[in-house]
Length: 288
Picture 1: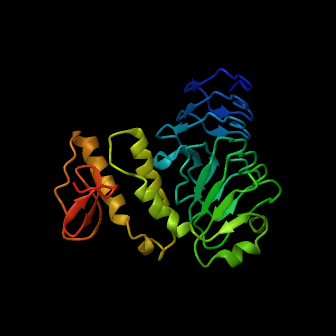
Picture 2: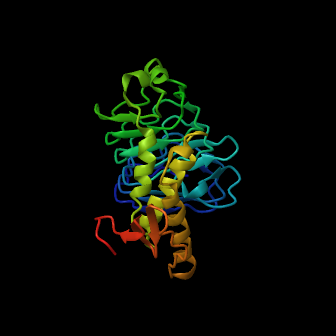
Picture 3: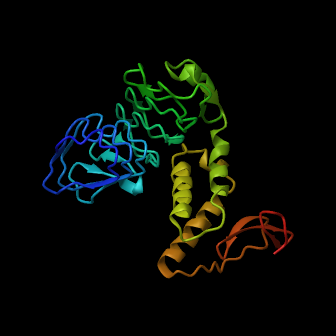
Protein backbone atom coordinates (compact mmCIF):
# COMPACT_ATOMS: atom_id res chain seq x y z
CA UNK A 1 0.00 0.00 0.00
CA UNK A 2 1.36 3.42 -0.98
CA UNK A 3 2.57 5.91 1.66
CA UNK A 4 0.17 8.68 2.66
CA UNK A 5 1.89 9.79 5.86
CA UNK A 6 1.71 13.46 6.91
CA UNK A 7 -1.66 13.76 5.14
CA UNK A 8 -3.14 15.87 7.94
CA UNK A 9 -6.57 16.40 6.38
CA UNK A 10 -7.34 12.68 6.00
CA UNK A 11 -10.15 11.68 8.41
CA UNK A 12 -11.04 8.18 7.22
CA UNK A 13 -10.01 5.76 4.53
CA UNK A 14 -11.41 2.71 2.78
CA UNK A 15 -8.63 0.28 2.01
CA UNK A 16 -9.36 -1.69 -1.20
CA UNK A 17 -9.74 -5.45 -0.97
CA UNK A 18 -6.89 -5.75 -3.44
CA UNK A 19 -4.45 -4.71 -0.69
CA UNK A 20 -2.58 -7.58 0.95
CA UNK A 21 0.13 -5.70 2.84
CA UNK A 22 0.10 -2.43 4.77
CA UNK A 23 3.64 -1.09 4.75
CA UNK A 24 5.69 0.60 7.48
CA UNK A 25 4.77 4.21 8.39
CA UNK A 26 1.90 4.32 5.88
CA UNK A 27 -0.43 6.46 8.05
CA UNK A 28 2.29 8.10 10.13
CA UNK A 29 1.35 11.59 11.36
CA UNK A 30 -2.09 11.54 9.71
CA UNK A 31 -3.23 13.68 12.61
CA UNK A 32 -6.92 13.90 11.62
CA UNK A 33 -7.45 10.22 10.84
CA UNK A 34 -10.25 9.06 13.14
CA UNK A 35 -11.36 5.69 11.78
CA UNK A 36 -10.02 2.86 9.68
CA UNK A 37 -11.27 -0.54 8.55
CA UNK A 38 -8.77 -3.25 7.68
CA UNK A 39 -10.18 -5.48 4.91
CA UNK A 40 -10.11 -9.25 5.10
CA UNK A 41 -7.57 -9.32 2.27
CA UNK A 42 -4.76 -7.90 4.42
CA UNK A 43 -2.17 -10.49 5.45
CA UNK A 44 0.68 -8.27 6.63
CA UNK A 45 0.94 -5.04 8.61
CA UNK A 46 4.24 -3.18 9.01
CA UNK A 47 5.77 -1.13 11.81
CA UNK A 48 4.77 2.36 13.02
CA UNK A 49 1.67 2.30 10.81
CA UNK A 50 -0.36 4.57 13.12
CA UNK A 51 2.47 6.48 14.76
CA UNK A 52 1.30 9.94 15.87
CA UNK A 53 -2.36 9.53 14.84
CA UNK A 54 -3.94 11.22 17.89
CA UNK A 55 -7.47 11.45 16.43
CA UNK A 56 -7.83 7.72 15.81
CA UNK A 57 -10.82 6.39 17.76
CA UNK A 58 -12.03 3.42 15.71
CA UNK A 59 -10.08 0.45 14.38
CA UNK A 60 -12.04 -2.40 12.81
CA UNK A 61 -10.76 -5.55 11.16
CA UNK A 62 -13.26 -7.11 8.78
CA UNK A 63 -14.57 -10.55 9.67
CA UNK A 64 -12.95 -13.57 8.02
CA UNK A 65 -9.53 -11.94 7.89
CA UNK A 66 -7.15 -14.95 8.00
CA UNK A 67 -4.53 -13.28 10.18
CA UNK A 68 -5.98 -10.36 12.16
CA UNK A 69 -9.12 -9.50 14.13
CA UNK A 70 -10.63 -6.81 16.35
CA UNK A 71 -12.47 -9.16 18.69
CA UNK A 72 -15.13 -7.94 21.09
CA UNK A 73 -15.24 -4.51 19.42
CA UNK A 74 -11.88 -3.78 21.08
CA UNK A 75 -10.81 -1.00 18.66
CA UNK A 76 -7.45 -2.64 18.09
CA UNK A 77 -5.68 -4.94 15.67
CA UNK A 78 -4.99 -8.39 17.10
CA UNK A 79 -2.81 -11.04 15.50
CA UNK A 80 -5.24 -13.92 15.84
CA UNK A 81 -2.92 -16.90 16.10
CA UNK A 82 -0.67 -15.41 18.78
CA UNK A 83 -3.22 -13.28 20.70
CA UNK A 84 -0.86 -10.35 20.25
CA UNK A 85 -2.18 -6.77 20.21
CA UNK A 86 -0.20 -4.97 17.52
CA UNK A 87 -2.00 -1.61 17.27
CA UNK A 88 -4.44 0.28 19.47
CA UNK A 89 -5.95 3.76 19.79
CA UNK A 90 -7.49 6.05 22.39
CA UNK A 91 -10.66 3.89 22.61
CA UNK A 92 -8.97 0.50 22.80
CA UNK A 93 -10.24 -2.03 25.34
CA UNK A 94 -7.55 -4.69 25.63
CA UNK A 95 -9.23 -8.13 25.56
CA UNK A 96 -8.48 -10.47 28.44
CA UNK A 97 -7.11 -13.20 26.15
CA UNK A 98 -4.28 -10.97 24.90
CA UNK A 99 -0.90 -12.41 25.85
CA UNK A 100 1.46 -9.77 24.47
CA UNK A 101 1.25 -6.07 23.64
CA UNK A 102 3.50 -5.48 20.66
CA UNK A 103 6.31 -2.92 20.37
CA UNK A 104 4.88 0.53 19.71
CA UNK A 105 1.24 -0.57 19.95
CA UNK A 106 0.17 2.87 21.25
CA UNK A 107 3.21 4.79 20.02
CA UNK A 108 2.47 8.53 19.85
CA UNK A 109 -1.16 8.16 20.94
CA UNK A 110 -1.16 11.50 22.72
CA UNK A 111 -4.94 11.41 23.37
CA UNK A 112 -4.89 8.14 25.32
CA UNK A 113 -5.68 9.11 28.91
CA UNK A 114 -6.30 5.75 30.58
CA UNK A 115 -5.88 2.06 29.85
CA UNK A 116 -6.65 -1.22 31.60
CA UNK A 117 -4.12 -4.04 31.21
CA UNK A 118 -5.87 -7.39 31.82
CA UNK A 119 -4.56 -10.19 33.96
CA UNK A 120 -3.88 -12.29 30.85
CA UNK A 121 -1.15 -10.01 29.48
CA UNK A 122 2.24 -11.49 30.30
CA UNK A 123 4.62 -9.53 28.05
CA UNK A 124 4.97 -6.01 26.67
CA UNK A 125 7.29 -4.81 23.94
CA UNK A 126 9.33 -1.62 23.87
CA UNK A 127 7.78 1.78 23.05
CA UNK A 128 4.29 0.49 23.87
CA UNK A 129 3.21 3.78 25.45
CA UNK A 130 5.98 5.98 24.06
CA UNK A 131 4.68 9.52 23.52
CA UNK A 132 1.36 8.92 25.30
CA UNK A 133 1.57 12.35 26.87
CA UNK A 134 -1.97 12.30 28.31
CA UNK A 135 -1.79 8.81 29.82
CA UNK A 136 -2.29 9.47 33.53
CA UNK A 137 -3.93 6.21 34.60
CA UNK A 138 -2.83 2.62 33.95
CA UNK A 139 -4.86 -0.06 35.71
CA UNK A 140 -2.79 -3.24 35.72
CA UNK A 141 -4.82 -6.25 36.85
CA UNK A 142 -1.95 -8.73 36.75
CA UNK A 143 -0.76 -9.80 40.22
CA UNK A 144 2.79 -9.94 38.84
CA UNK A 145 4.20 -7.16 36.63
CA UNK A 146 4.53 -7.99 32.94
CA UNK A 147 7.91 -8.84 31.50
CA UNK A 148 9.03 -6.04 29.20
CA UNK A 149 10.94 -7.34 26.21
CA UNK A 150 13.09 -4.23 25.86
CA UNK A 151 12.67 -1.81 28.72
CA UNK A 152 14.17 1.25 27.01
CA UNK A 153 11.26 3.57 26.24
CA UNK A 154 8.07 1.70 27.04
CA UNK A 155 6.60 4.57 29.13
CA UNK A 156 8.67 7.44 27.73
CA UNK A 157 6.78 10.74 27.60
CA UNK A 158 4.05 9.81 30.05
CA UNK A 159 3.15 12.51 32.61
CA UNK A 160 5.31 12.43 35.71
CA UNK A 161 2.21 12.20 37.91
CA UNK A 162 0.77 9.19 36.06
CA UNK A 163 -0.46 6.44 38.38
CA UNK A 164 -0.32 2.68 37.94
CA UNK A 165 -3.25 1.15 39.80
CA UNK A 166 -2.61 -2.45 40.90
CA UNK A 167 -4.41 -5.02 43.02
CA UNK A 168 -3.94 -5.13 46.81
CA UNK A 169 -1.00 -7.21 48.00
CA UNK A 170 0.97 -6.92 44.76
CA UNK A 171 3.05 -3.80 45.36
CA UNK A 172 6.20 -5.56 46.57
CA UNK A 173 6.66 -7.33 43.23
CA UNK A 174 6.11 -4.14 41.21
CA UNK A 175 8.55 -2.16 43.34
CA UNK A 176 11.43 -4.46 42.40
CA UNK A 177 10.49 -4.98 38.73
CA UNK A 178 12.50 -3.15 36.10
CA UNK A 179 10.69 -0.05 34.72
CA UNK A 180 7.60 -0.58 36.89
CA UNK A 181 9.55 0.36 40.02
CA UNK A 182 10.11 3.85 38.57
CA UNK A 183 6.38 4.59 38.33
CA UNK A 184 3.83 5.77 40.88
CA UNK A 185 2.25 2.54 42.16
CA UNK A 186 -1.03 2.55 44.11
CA UNK A 187 -2.83 -0.57 45.37
CA UNK A 188 -6.40 0.45 44.59
CA UNK A 189 -7.32 -1.35 41.37
CA UNK A 190 -9.97 -3.35 43.24
CA UNK A 191 -11.91 -0.10 43.80
CA UNK A 192 -11.68 1.11 40.20
CA UNK A 193 -13.92 -1.59 38.69
CA UNK A 194 -16.85 -0.89 41.07
CA UNK A 195 -16.48 2.81 40.23
CA UNK A 196 -16.63 2.01 36.52
CA UNK A 197 -19.81 0.01 37.07
CA UNK A 198 -21.44 2.82 39.04
CA UNK A 199 -20.43 5.25 36.28
CA UNK A 200 -22.69 3.45 33.79
CA UNK A 201 -25.61 5.43 35.19
CA UNK A 202 -29.03 5.16 33.57
CA UNK A 203 -29.15 2.79 30.60
CA UNK A 204 -29.76 4.52 27.28
CA UNK A 205 -29.61 3.22 23.73
CA UNK A 206 -26.54 5.27 22.86
CA UNK A 207 -22.98 4.54 21.82
CA UNK A 208 -21.71 6.33 24.94
CA UNK A 209 -23.72 4.10 27.25
CA UNK A 210 -22.68 0.95 25.36
CA UNK A 211 -19.03 1.98 25.65
CA UNK A 212 -19.36 2.37 29.44
CA UNK A 213 -21.00 -1.04 29.76
CA UNK A 214 -18.42 -2.75 27.53
CA UNK A 215 -15.54 -1.10 29.36
CA UNK A 216 -16.87 -2.14 32.77
CA UNK A 217 -17.49 -5.70 31.55
CA UNK A 218 -14.00 -5.98 30.08
CA UNK A 219 -12.46 -4.70 33.33
CA UNK A 220 -14.47 -7.12 35.44
CA UNK A 221 -13.61 -10.09 33.22
CA UNK A 222 -9.94 -9.08 33.32
CA UNK A 223 -9.74 -9.49 37.09
CA UNK A 224 -7.80 -12.54 38.30
CA UNK A 225 -9.72 -15.45 39.80
CA UNK A 226 -10.73 -14.63 43.35
CA UNK A 227 -10.93 -10.87 42.91
CA UNK A 228 -14.25 -10.84 41.04
CA UNK A 229 -16.08 -11.85 44.20
CA UNK A 230 -14.90 -8.58 45.78
CA UNK A 231 -16.92 -6.51 43.28
CA UNK A 232 -20.05 -6.04 45.36
CA UNK A 233 -22.01 -4.09 42.73
CA UNK A 234 -21.66 -6.68 39.95
CA UNK A 235 -25.48 -6.96 39.84
CA UNK A 236 -25.58 -3.42 38.42
CA UNK A 237 -23.37 -4.42 35.50
CA UNK A 238 -25.43 -7.55 34.89
CA UNK A 239 -28.68 -5.60 34.86
CA UNK A 240 -27.21 -2.87 32.68
CA UNK A 241 -26.21 -5.44 30.06
CA UNK A 242 -29.66 -7.03 30.12
CA UNK A 243 -31.32 -3.62 29.89
CA UNK A 244 -29.19 -2.51 26.94
CA UNK A 245 -29.77 -5.80 25.14
CA UNK A 246 -33.50 -5.40 25.57
CA UNK A 247 -33.33 -1.85 24.25
CA UNK A 248 -31.22 -3.03 21.34
CA UNK A 249 -33.69 -5.79 20.45
CA UNK A 250 -37.01 -4.07 21.07
CA UNK A 251 -36.42 -0.39 21.71
CA UNK A 252 -38.43 -0.82 24.92
CA UNK A 253 -36.89 -1.29 28.35
CA UNK A 254 -38.90 -3.13 30.98
CA UNK A 255 -37.12 -4.86 33.85
CA UNK A 256 -39.84 -6.96 35.44
CA UNK A 257 -37.54 -8.21 38.18
CA UNK A 258 -37.97 -5.44 40.75
CA UNK A 259 -35.96 -6.57 43.80
CA UNK A 260 -37.29 -4.03 46.29
CA UNK A 261 -36.92 -6.49 49.16
CA UNK A 262 -33.14 -6.23 49.04
CA UNK A 263 -31.09 -3.12 49.80
CA UNK A 264 -28.81 -2.10 46.93
CA UNK A 265 -28.50 -0.34 43.58
CA UNK A 266 -30.58 -1.58 40.65
CA UNK A 267 -31.61 -0.71 37.13
CA UNK A 268 -35.39 -0.49 37.01
CA UNK A 269 -36.89 0.56 33.69
CA UNK A 270 -33.47 1.74 32.63
CA UNK A 271 -32.98 4.00 35.62
CA UNK A 272 -30.36 3.55 38.32
CA UNK A 273 -32.20 3.46 41.64
CA UNK A 274 -31.22 2.80 45.22
CA UNK A 275 -33.47 0.47 47.19
CA UNK A 276 -33.60 1.05 50.93
CA UNK A 277 -36.30 0.12 53.42
CA UNK A 278 -38.36 -1.22 50.50
CA UNK A 279 -38.44 2.24 48.91
CA UNK A 280 -36.83 3.56 45.72
CA UNK A 281 -34.50 6.56 45.70
CA UNK A 282 -32.62 8.16 42.83
CA UNK A 283 -28.88 8.71 43.04
CA UNK A 284 -29.50 12.12 44.62
CA UNK A 285 -31.34 10.48 47.53
CA UNK A 286 -34.78 11.70 46.46
CA UNK A 287 -37.64 9.23 46.78
CA UNK A 288 -39.20 8.06 43.53
